[in-house]
Length: 227
Image (cartoon, rainbow, N blue to C red):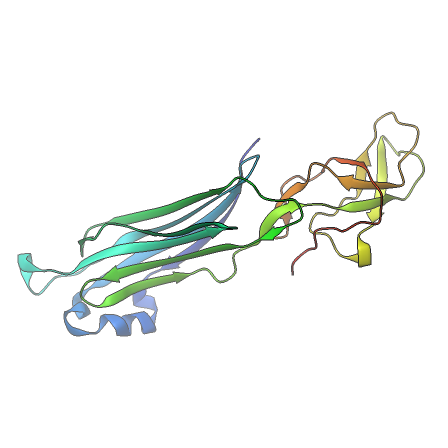
């Protein structure tokens, strides 16, 4: 199955963020010119979900101590996908060295109907001043495997498809709505259908545009769209 990814980019050049620059103004850190970036991705791999969070970049400038300049920096990357993941810390290297730290996680066993969260964060620490850069990702999408119940609006297929309407209990708006079900040469439509297998989604995006469905007993509990 073709990999489908949602990519979220966070570019952080400290020169444009006054609060971070104030941190850098302490002591000999005033000569540092940091430039770091971070991104997070979440991907459906056909059976589960993969996520990746990366922090990379470097600091430039002219150290007033010349070759004896001592500050060092390192990155910390946080990646939680459902119940899986945590922090990864990169090696401590010279202040002007390029750093790249990636935290990859895989969640192989998502349960149908369960909505999961994706959390990411990145930091760059400096031995001279402490926190040098911070990368919060405040609005990452939830994800999971959705179930949707529908009801046929006609007794017979139209062009091989049975048109459908929402049959979620309580009129819940499903994260993966279904407008039609393929029945091919069948003479009749079933009264109710349920998506099977459950449909992978990331945020409000269903990763299978026309999900398969089987006859079911409705109305039923649907995976709701989270606004």
